[in-house]
Length: 170
Ligand code: FEO
Image: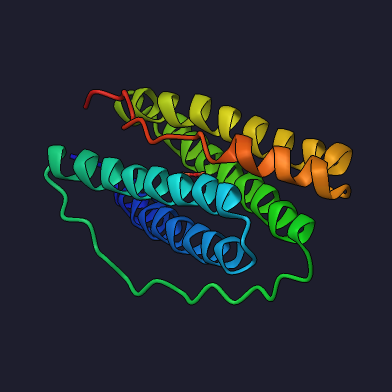
């Protein structure tokens, strides 16, 4: 059995992961709409990753006798002013998600809920990787993205990203 507070936070996290998926679908849409299909693909893959994260949280709750509460997912309503703005927003969002996961970890620690802490270990590491990936996206865009040939090369690179389902075993 999970503590009430943990269940509450996990439910919020499920919604945040689904929102992340929805947000990146919107970002992907934005790039496809601007003919940057490589970036469109990169964010498409991110959408799938976030969806997989949400499902992992749902499964963890199921495995612990809890039924996740699926709330409405908010509309992604960022009006992107530039390609760089879209990427920067993704970075900001990942920092927010890391904070959110760290908070659940902190509450689990206070409650001595070692099982949840162990489950969250994978997410803490994953967030580190996600922050690094998007930070790299921002930096590479700053370096090469303002030149049409550079942007073309970057976009071609982004097209190569593929989806690998999370390796976490529950
Ligand atoms: Fe599932 Fe990018 O956080």
